[in-house]
Image (cartoon, rainbow, N blue to C red; front, side):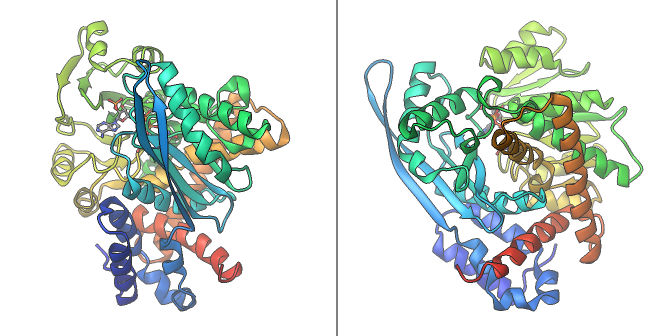
Length: 449
Ligand code: NDP
């Protein structure tokens, strides 16, 4: 593992002191800075212009009260966030997460990652992220609507298609985005479609956006395997989570001839040796909003294991962590490698702990970090903005073909940067360097702002 240089060490110390207790944010910054030593050696002008210090400090951080009333008339008060991290390349762009674990450190880690991810797409989008410590689970549609309306009543003044364009993330799907967009439209008196992405197909959404993150992760995985002369045909895979990213990743692995043996939610996991049935999974998760245990009721040969244990001990050749940050630990990585796992692609953001990443790299496992592998979601959001601006609606096939091209371009950028900076095949270094270089160039060009 590379070490940050003295300059980078100093930047990291400042980030830790200035953002106390925000451990996920520290982890994300450390991981990027560990890759940048060779870049500063080649481009000392970026150190002189304090580019890294400027990138590590968000342009704007918003924190606000979100009061709302439940169906019994009881009042609740949640906390809302939007971190507008960096707009050197375009308007702030990144999702909203509704989950009880959300606090400033999570939003900042996600916003920081988003800067480099968005740069890797080659598109004109800056980085941001937001959310709230609200748990939509178990809430009625009317309660979710009232929460979303209250959230947007504050957030709307900070948004705009040229300023800040949110999308979904954990706990924020088409239902929540509908209520958020409706309230934005009502307050501003503007049908400004380009202000939110991930919208429903009937009101400005783009075909293929819902599938894009999961499909894109598998496209990146395929490209990574191709460079090693391998493919997905006949592979076995484990996919954590059973939300938007996981379900679509499972579908695409199957389309490429692989078999996904297991998936999970926060209550347990399923092992289905015949391959997870995505039709059944979609019905349970997307239509009924039910628990994964229902899968075993409907597919009798499947095994359901309740609890918080993970399934990374199940033998498989591919791992796709698609649930949440730090869900795959060093011990899990050791089990995966011991069972012959040869490739890992992160559908989620930062799902592997630093110890797990070290194990994968040391074992020569092909490892695709989230900021590269899951960038297909935000890239397709940018395609949605493009369609909204042109008042066009592309076919699903056109979007999917463009997504595949974009993922191949991102893979190529990461691969080339890793080679150029002396670490062939190291996609962590390649993604960090290629993303950073694009932001750094724009940062210098725009002056000290
Ligand atoms: P969803 O809310 O659709 O699904 C999340 C899944 O992960 C659910 O199965 C959920 O289980 C599980 N999960 C969430 N938190 C935890 C936890 N603390 N412990 C165990 N399981 C958990 O979210 P998405 O699929 O949209 O997002 C998944 C990941 O992908 C996140 O890291 C997100 O940041 C990332 N991502 C998403 C993009 C998108 O376009 N949606 C784009 C790029 C990255 P349960 O239902 O039981 O809570």
